[in-house]
Structure formats: C-alpha cells, structure tokens
Image (cartoon, rainbow, N blue to C red; front, side, top):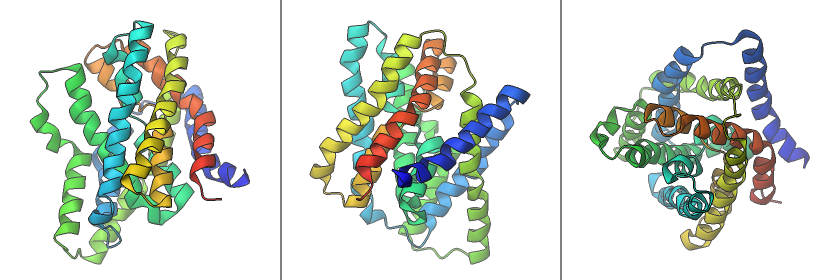
Length: 291
C-alpha cells in the first residue's frame, strides 16, 4: 500500500498544485500547452524511441495490446450509450481515448522505473495516433486524415522509429539536448491537467459519473482479456492493465468543442473521470505491480 501511495503521490501532488494555482490566478495555459505539444512532448517521444535501449521488435505485442484496449473499450461502451440514449459520438471517444499523456507517462515511469519510458511512449503513441485518426473520423467523416503526419508528436515518433530501425548514431550532445527538452514535458502535462480540472462539470454530472466508472473498467477488462493472447511479460502486462485504467484524455473535450459534439457533456465525462482516477489508478496499481 505504501508503495502505491509513493507512486501516485507525486502525480496527484503536481495535479493538485496546478488546480490550486488555477483557482487563485486563473492562468491562460493555451501557450504553455501548445508549446508542450509542439516541442517538449515530441522531444520526449523522439528521445525515448531513438534511444539505444529501444527495441521495436520487443514492443509490437504491446502496441497491439494498446490498440485492442482502445477499440475494445469502444465496443463495450457502445451498448451503454444505446441504453442511456446518449449519442455514440458523445460517449465512445472519451471511453476509447485515455489520458496516456498527462497521466499515463509519469504514472508508468514512477511505477516501473525510467527503463519503462520507451514502453510508456509506445502506449502513448498508439493511443494518440488512433485519437487523431479514428477519433477525428468518428466526429467528422470528411476530415482529411492524410495530414496526420503533420501532428508534431506523430512526426517525432516516426523520426524516432526511423533512427532506431536504421541504427543511426546521434551525436551525444544533440541527443542530450533533445532529452532535456523532453524532461520538461511530464511535469507540465500534470500541472496543465490540474488547471483543466477547474472547469465546470455541472452540465451532466450523471453521465460524467457513468463515464468515470465505465472508462477504466472497460479498459482493464479488455487488457485482462488480451494479455494471455499476446504473451506479454509481467512488466508489459502490468503496464497494459494500468493503461486500460487511465481516465479520459482532455483532448476529447477539445475535439468535441471543435466538431460541436456536445462539448459540455464531454467535459463532464473528462473532468469527473480524471477525479475518479484517485480510485481506479491505485486499484490498477494493486493488481499490476509485482508482489
């Protein structure tokens, strides 16, 4: 139990600091968030995938597992949306696309150590790519998906994978510089999440509560189901289970706002879901961490 507290405390402490600061100062995080997603997170992704410790062949099963969790969560959420008479495009994306960036990256590194960062980046890359591709298509069938490579995080991942596959030796000072830029990403992601949580959830609290439970439960159920089929080792199996337990990504609200898909209701799902992570993340850690 103390180990779980030691893992989650730094995460929720930084989120709490962001929340408290936003309640007092009401900062405009738009520029900081844009800078993070355009520079710091891509640097983090590139450094992890281009590093000497990254082995693409050892990660394809984990990537397949992440894909299964994303798609499987949507399948499990679909009948719930029908039952609640909620538009599928309102409920399904937040259930499918989780907070693998803001919360997933730091959580997995704290739980499994710095050596787990490449695995965490693989999970984040799969979820993020599916969100920009499938998530965009779900909300707008006319969206131009060929522009996907222009998303900085995805471009950085492609570049990092190319360096890894081609065995390119980066100049060490250059690699260190990129890695230092990437080190900014995780604390800023967490602080920004705290600022986001100051938003209102009054529009549909009932749907928010349903989504807060459904998202991690569906994700963990799919993860449990696919782990034996993929033959993942204990570490990767634990990481996939925690990945499944993550709350909805904040990006779901931004997409809902952009495509006018009931953004107020989606905001409730996202905000309540991230608060509920205080319950579901420790639960996932309890089952995922080696005894």
